[in-house]
Length: 223
Image (cartoon, rainbow, N blue to C red; front, side, top):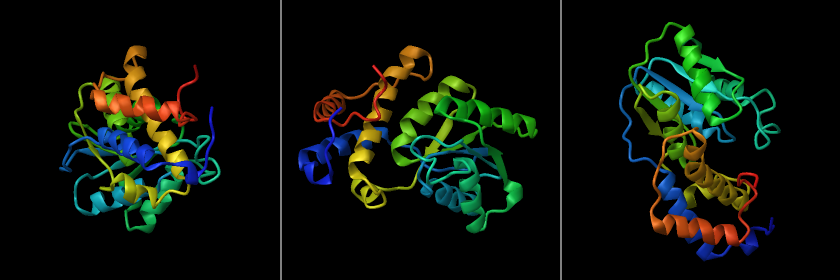
């Protein structure tokens, strides 16, 4: 694994990261759904987007899902779902519209466990709003289609470009590493039965290979 700081990030690296960032986005438009799931992460913007969509009347109930991970345990020591709930409440969401799923440690569990929470609450889900970080949309979609094939999820995030999102992140190198990690999972997880296949354009794969050669690999799967 190579290591380098922000000063080592080249404009060519950023151009490749933008290609991968754009591929991670799903071309979905927000529409009313019978329920929503917000996937835990290090980004409180997911909870803020959830509150905005709730106030717009797009869903009646949300499941905030996620335990802590290596990336979030310091920022969210009580768990991602718990901190998301608290932030959403501070933005005016009513507690009765919120369900918690505090145990999931990966995207497959986010979907599986949230589905169980909704079923146990007696909520019939015919349409699903899936709210995540911008660069997690495609992996979340592919995972949901595999784990819950009866539901066609609508994937929504904060509408930010790569450059705008960098300004909200403490560590640009880590952000590109995370883009790379999600990209590799989009490629590899269908082979492991975790997700449906999502074909990446050749130019996106070339960008992924260039960045991996440049040492953006700390969030890749163990070899």
